Length: 285
Image (tube, rainbow, N blue to C red; front, side, top):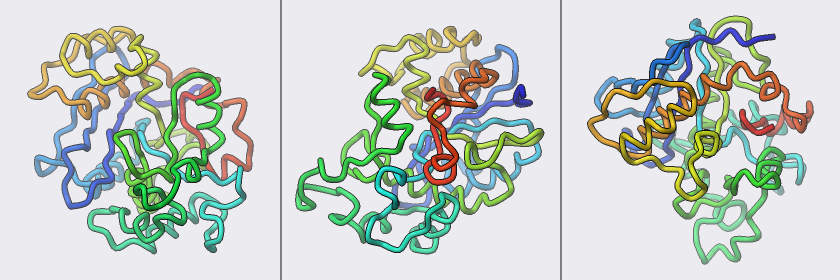
């Protein structure tokens, strides 16, 4: 089946504490070759709740949305998300579990990690050796083994590359999204309406010819060069070139460029057990 999507969005996400987050950017493009444009935040700066409401409003549109955070922790390799803790065994149930154990502002989840530091999450040297926390999902292991880069684990909450706080905040958003918008691959690709998928902006950067270690685009020329690799016209000038905005714009163009590739919807390593528990990153084949 050829996906029906004619609109494509990429969202650079944030797990930061607080109510509004300069690290969130939403870029949107239509089918064709016009460059993606940033979607203005309702109140000038996006909150995670704003993003949730925006997604809910898009439910009936032919929109494919990519988020750059991990939709679930590893499960298959160890048989549990948080070994020793009585957690659910499917991703959707685990999203509800995370939400029920968080009272952080604006769908945040920092407290979930902080209460489990040293047991499940690495938040600093006093938690012991970081190597003991480096557990990966099946798609992350596949991505790493294929030389695509170095995927981060949701159990490591320290350093610029960590995705832990953003991922658990994202799981709360996915829980609150509920059945309004399906989430791939936990749900099948719908015949109409919107769909949410997990992406790596680093995959888009590699596909654009950006060298490893230089995946952040910080000026107009670099962004246009990346867009050209995805058959996109140049972008409208931005007031500020930060990697949140440029990541979102580049990833939206990449998503449009590859969305009709059948193999990306049917990766060889995606079993039914992985589909239910860990999910998969769109673009990892």
